[in-house]
Length: 101
Image (cartoon, rainbow, N blue to C red):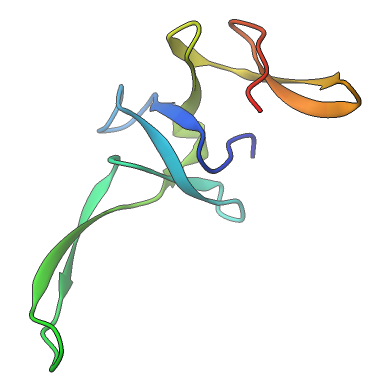
């Protein structure tokens, strides 16, 4: 999986196509990511002795193939490449050629 936590991504497929947000967490075993403000789901919480009942809105996971890294220089979605710079392997933007990490 080439997408990491705190990356800025653009949704390229699905009901939230075109939205941007940061990755809150990744689920590599299922190849899914949770993006801020995307795929909002409703959870109903039952009332307990200490808290009242409520309806929570939270982000659900989406497939990692439905998002692309957002390149701030090109102001568009971009693919990711890898290069060795200064002895370290870094991710680079295919559109601008700048390092993402």
